[in-house]
Image 1 (cartoon, helix red, strand yellow):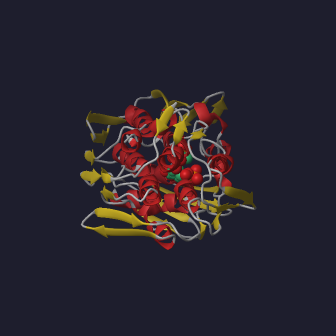
Image 2 (cartoon, helix red, strand yellow):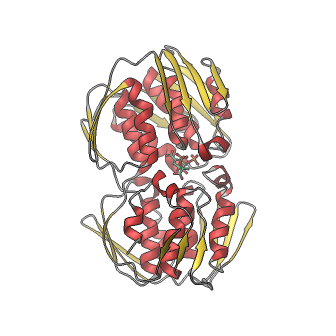
Image 3 (tube, protein in one colour):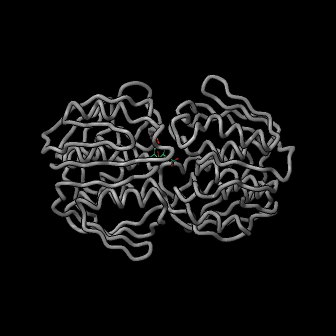
Amino acid sequence: MFCIKAGRLEGKFAAPPSKPYSQRLLLASALAEGETVIRGVEWSDDFTAMFRAVQPLARLYCEGGVVKASRREPDFYRSFNVMESGFTLRTAVAVYAGVPGITAVYYGGTLKGRPIDELVEALRRLTAVEKTAGAIVVEGRRLEEFDVEIRADISSQYISGLMYLAAHVGRGIVRPVGERKSWSFVEATAEVLKKFGAHVELGETIEVEGPLRSPRAVDVPSDFSLAAFLVVAGVATGGHVELLGTLAEVDKWAIDVFRQMGADITIDNGIMRVGGVFTRGVDVDLGRNPDLVMPVALAAAMVEEESAIRGVDHLRYKESDRVATVLDVLRRLGVEVRYDKGAIYIRGPPTKREVAFQTHGDHRIGLMALAAAKIVGGCVDDLTPVAKSWPSSILYFKG
Ligand SMILES: O=C(O)C1=C[C@@H](OP(=O)(O)O)[C@@H](O)[C@H](O)C1
Ligand SMILES: C=C(OP(=O)(O)O)C(=O)O
């Protein structure tokens, strides 16, 4: 049990480093020609998962938050545990299909109940892939150019995995089928592959052409989906919060969502200053950016006007069923909330104080609970999950 007193969140904080970018940069560095220095890494469980996954084909050195990576002759037999990292599981299974040799990718915890079968089916058109209890075994081949269809409405990481495979083997075409969920993360993959010299076209189909070449040194950008918890806690407690760092593209447009709700956010010389009061509800579709649902829902819980957060049905495939667990956090706050046809409707403000929150084994629900506890006071049952994306978060909220 971790308890927090209600009170103003005040201070100057380093914005949290982006987990999705740190993982993408490490994977690209491990496949690229030449050494890459990656600066500003936070050793989250998911980054560690990617570090394990690339070890059989990369030379790796680390010192604090700096990692140096370059490709090497891959081991023929390789096995590693990606723990609960969906991105690492889905990209590793795809990439190793194009690396001659045999790979056993172990996975566990909440990831055991999350989707992977559609990617396994798509890869079986290229090579042998066996799914057993808790592991996937991939027979890697020297693949030529490939052309595959894959469902786009379950996880964008299937597509990101196939894009990395294409860059690695030389060329590939990926045909997304159905609604394009979490699409901003496909764009983030394209952005990183292009930084490493690949040619990427995102259209009706996706075309990727390698090879990957190191840009020599890269900085991990900051993550707005995580920083947003500090923004919400700062605004909701009337505190003054300053965040230092350059935000990654993927979720940063959502600053305007918080502004629409009444937050006063300015960015000047890489410093984000946060103030204002949440006074208005919002009607927003977060289907392209699912990780923003938790902080936006918490901000919406502060205002009386009803908010609608749409496009959230695929949140059921995350570390927890986030449709259910976001509703759980809000109900514990005494907020009116309902889910209907892919949308969450929220009407605040909180009517409860000193609340007992549950993380349900999910890091983003844990972070939402930490920010909520700073606002109304309360306790979080288990902090372990937050190490998946932002282990240092507890230091920001401890206060
Ligand atoms: O590619 C990525 O790094 C991610 C993609 C999204 O998942 P899905 O594509 O499975 O929705 C997102 O929710 C996750 O936190 C990170
Ligand atoms: C769903 C997430 O990550 P992953 O899919 O990589 O496990 C997340 O960080 O919320």
